[in-house]
Length: 233
Image 1 (cartoon, rainbow, N blue to C red):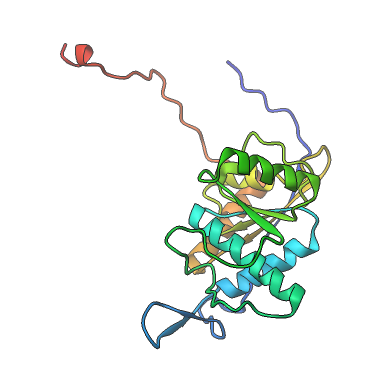
Image 2 (cartoon, rainbow, N blue to C red):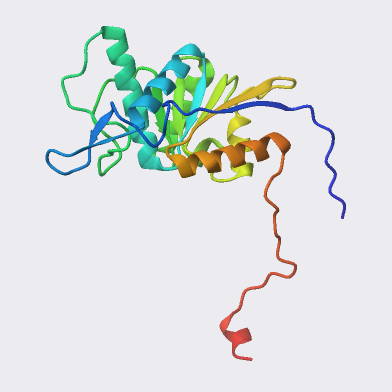
């Protein structure tokens, strides 16, 4: 058997964005850490604001998160920020950044304005509606997990945003490949690392994505499963 890889002119425009000057000094964005009177700096307010900027600057955006809870919380915050920008008034409730997530992952907040969540815990009917709204241009952004990596035609997506480093090079290519999914189009992706270690991983994965250095796939030569009858022999 011979594996054929035809020449491809697919082009990626990838960038790793750190929305603060120094990941080691995140002053100016206090986030309660659960202890009374104690606060800690967080990168999340900066990330949330920058993602909202990018969503509002594009027609259609997919934001990928590596967990369902983060996808729900981040989606809620994007809508809250968009609401506050549109009305000029902050919401009455106290809302913490995406790092502080509720137990269910579905926090109360602003009405849906610019984004909706898409993951395995969302019903099939709701996922289909979200996909159709994004393709039709009625919804500017979707915050998703791996549920949007494969097998779904999402139409003309302008930008893909990845929060935290992609799980793998192959996953990163699948996700960013959702943008510019037409012949000759450029797939544009932005990665937001959370901390220093994540920044290093994001830089390595992004560089390997540029060169197409996908992880090797190991297929068992003679896979088999044991059964009571065979194991007793």
